[in-house]
Length: 356
Image 1 (cartoon, rainbow, N blue to C red):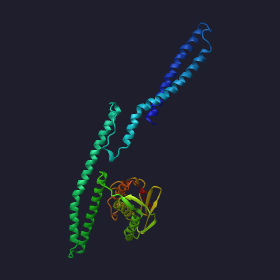
Image 2 (image 1 turned 135 degrees about the horizontal axis):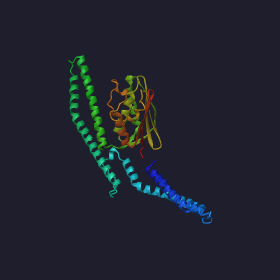
Image 3 (image 1 turned 180 degrees about the vertical axis):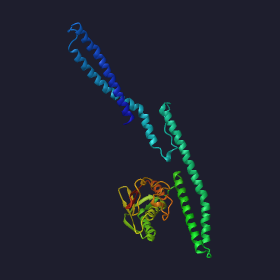
Image 4 (image 1 turned 120 degrees about the horizontal axis):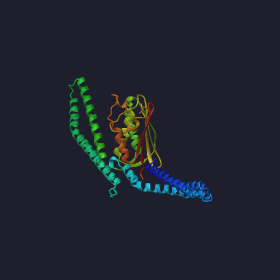
């Protein structure tokens, strides 16, 4: 129940109780006491027998009308009094990480709500500053890490060219190179997401034939799935054109395909399809892996979040692929969702607006 409703009901109850009390006092003074006096002095004609009924009708008629008027008036007064609260609530609901710098308009009358608005603006200002410092730290750290990682990668690759290396030494260097490349991938992903949060990534929008990208991705997925003997199918691929960034869309499809293969089971299956709807294109990719439990499904797009099956040593990943995929879809004005039945099927659905 809203505050407005509670206030109106309490107002109506108090107003009704007051009217009943006044009616009771008037009835007692004008009817009960007069009858008592008439009985005491044996003056039956002092009080008219219809007076009590008339007074009762007057109280019910005017009292009932007063209650209705009081209820409507109470509702109007509380609605008017709480209108600034409703307005403030709607303004606060629109606050996101991307618009923390936007201030909520103040009334300027100095009342409690105006003071509350000032406190909200100060709080969002502090949050905006904190987020900016985190972004700057992440960008600077990523930038500083790129150079030594590039050097380590180059030196390791150079060392691997030495024909005098023994097999154990070569395997150790290959393991080191794999870890360096994994760190490089994490740094690149963090840099991309941090720049995207700060609005520093511009999309190169152009007319893109999405069906061609899907077919190319289908061929790449077959290569990725071959070592695990995973069957890859392209169920449907409608001819669809959208306006988007070709490089980012290819990255999106590759991330989803890589996850579908990586979190699958040997001899499993991956099915993808592309269909056109009224005003959007729907890309769907399914895999027969271990799936995601219902309690973890809402967190799959969180950065660095990985389910239990993703923590196995045989599965390589950094927990940023789906976060990057979500950003790419959102940057194109689309939506992405994941449905999963544990131990059965996981489905990723991407909807992108069609080119107009």
